Length: 441
Image 1: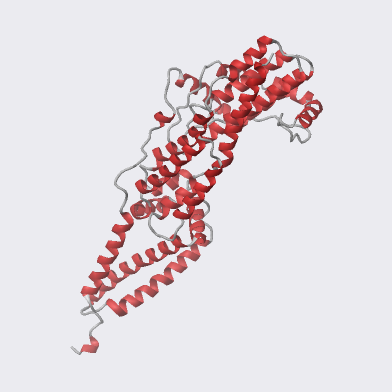
Image 2: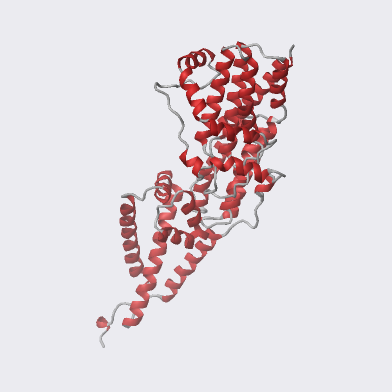
């Protein structure tokens, strides 16, 4: 047989094998090229994360076309350079294997292991109080059917801190407030039952789809409770106003210490702050007896602001650690925002999880950040929170394909904490000032 008639690479069966191996190498190289592009370019990172957690969109077609062109170019160059040499083909496979070993290498152990029970202990009565609270959970029929009452005209001033606008809005919307208050009688009974517990537990599992409280019903009850109490004060009924306000203040404070989510904790802080400002409004506008002042002071006792500020960070880290650190990246995306994605996409990500997501490395970095933040928050060094985040962001967004999706999760899952911590401390200041005011004769 003439040499010119022999296919490049030897007999047909070897030619086909070499082509298949080179195609596999080209596919892997194409994957690594895109991994490097995504890991070193913020625009690529944002677009890829949006596609994974939001709508796939038309950009997928462009990325698929780009991947096809890269694959074709790599395969052509591989055929030209490697097809005649088995040692070269083997050498490329060994080099690619070394790259994958590097990408999959993880830290040896978690530096900041924590359980939800360490952050939010289960105490006697926790289950009973949590069951009452969750009657208006997001997935409970009562929570889903609740509709917050509306006003005929816009009612933007739901903040007793702005006393003049608060007083004007109360007067203008008195009849609507009173009608709403009567209409939510069953929710008020639920609120009173909740306030009867000396503390309110949280048994939510560490899961993004765990049952959470319905914000609308708590906002409606706290805002209307503050409004009715303020109207009672304007009518000269100071003691009655305090008694109306006490359940609002009580529930707002009691849901904070054992909360397992940042959102629940912040709802409690917002309610407490509104109740404190309403209490000041009542004291400014009505005579309050010594007994009512004592009941209000008792409801304000307890609570260390440094401990509360630290808790904000501890719960967020514990929640993410306990469900993300033991999950593969496809499962994480499927449960945290990619529910509409084809299962084959998240299954493919699960297969690639070791090279895309190093859980111990990810949570060691997150744990270092959060423990540092906890100390700063507890010491009220709020001006250093953003500086610590800026340093962490610069470090974690340096060009690198290593732990790509772990780094993206870190940057996407961490909320802005400076305002949250500031509100926590300001509420503590307001509580201390009100207690001092009540202590005066």
